[in-house]
Image 1 (cartoon, rainbow, N blue to C red):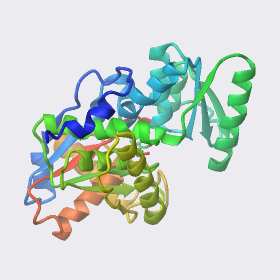
Image 2: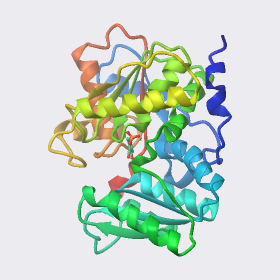
Image 3: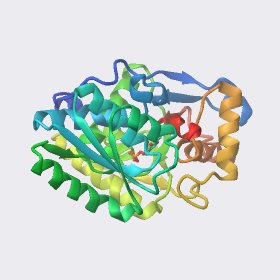
Length: 322
Ligand SMILES: Cc1ncc(COP(=O)(O)O)c(C=O)c1O
């Protein structure tokens, strides 16, 4: 069977066009030397998706925003941390589609908006600050009610757009990678709300690859994040009408350090090495920690039997300017 066939139901889902073109995949030959890698390391450049400063969320939003449009929504509501890449990408997509956007951001309103919040405002989103992560869902529910009462037909996007529908964007990304001739033994990427890893895993299952998908956690412990990833993967396989057996999620939570967004020695090293060997930026909240995970795998020799490793760069570079 063509590897494309099991993806046909996902391809048939309504999508708005935000990606424009496949993201680039290329080899990191100077970085390989910098970390004494014996095998080739490739990178998938979702950081350089042109739309709205790019990142993995653009893939999810092609499907999720199409669902909002399909429901005739006038306003989208979503949430995240103050420097949420997901919120920034959602604000950009809402602007592109002519929708209003309410963002619930956990943390105190900064005196000066920087990085992603500055872009949120530039894209025309309304920002609502709540003290705590736990306050986000009730605040979104209250806003949903308010917008409905105003006749602004709200559509709520859960944290990170990490639903099976959003994750379908990443499964389709796997086939994009295959179309470009890349079939790595291992994919390493940053994982947080589970949609990226659930989507990549389902993509690997649907296309019949043996590729390991290793998610390096940005905050959550491995067991609950793994369970979330597997739920999304199962939901996505169901959405694709597949009865293929889901794969277990491989989540590594040993690079979080003191917590979400707090740099570690390893993330600082990863950021510096990649910037100085390749001119590519990774951020301390997500991608530098994920790259630190990849470096540790290479140095421990546990990837010695693999012929190729791919770092899926999920974006986040705006955060370094916050
Ligand atoms: C730059 C970046 N990388 C990775 C992730 C993790 O993706 P997911 O939430 O789908 O696990 C995020 C999520 O916010 C992100 O912004």
